Image (cartoon, rainbow, N blue to C red; front, top):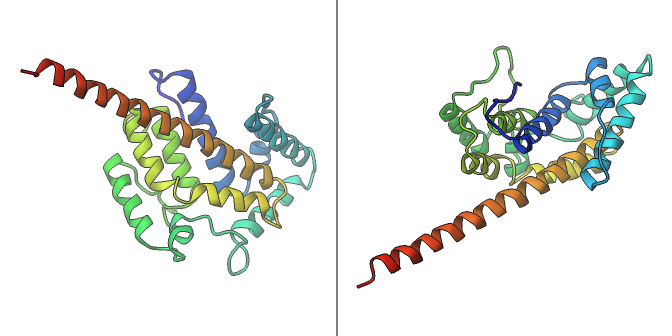
Length: 222
C-alpha cells in the first residue's frame, strides 16, 4: 500500500506497522515475506525489541528449506485448524462470541462510508484482524478516506480498541505460537502506542475547545 506524499514520517511509519501486521495475519507467510520481515531492525524501545525478536525468527525460517512450510503449519494451527484454530481472529467473535454479529455490521457500514469493499473471491467476514489493520493502515497512509486524525481515531476506537489488544495478548500466549509470539507482542505494544496517542489528541482537542469557549465568553461578555 503506497502512502500519500502529503503525510508525515510518523504517519508513514504507522501505516507500515499496520501493513506489517496485516500481511502477517492475512495468510500463511511466504518465503519472500519471511525474508522481508527478517531484514527489519528494531531500536532499544520495547516495540523495537519486539520487532528485533520477530525479525530473528523470520530470518531463521527464511533460511530453513522447510521454513515456509513450518510457518504455514503454525498459521494453520493458530487461525484455521481442523474445525477452528487456537484463536479466532474476528472482531465479532471476540466481542460477542459469534462470528457474524453487530461489530461486523458496524464495520460494513463504515467500510461503505469509506468506499472500501471486500476483495473479490474472499468469503470470510470483513472483521478479520488483518482486514481491519489493513484499513487502518490505509487511513494512516492517506490512501483510504482522509488522513484526518479524528477520523482515524473514530475508526480505531470503533473497530480495533475494543478487542484487538486482547487478541494480541492471546497470540503472545498461544501454545502453537513461535513466529507469531513476537507478532502478538508487536501488535499489543503498537496498539498501546496508538491508544495513548489518540488519547493525547482527544485531550488536546478538549483543551482547545475549552479555551475557545473561554475566549468566546470574553468576547461576548456584556
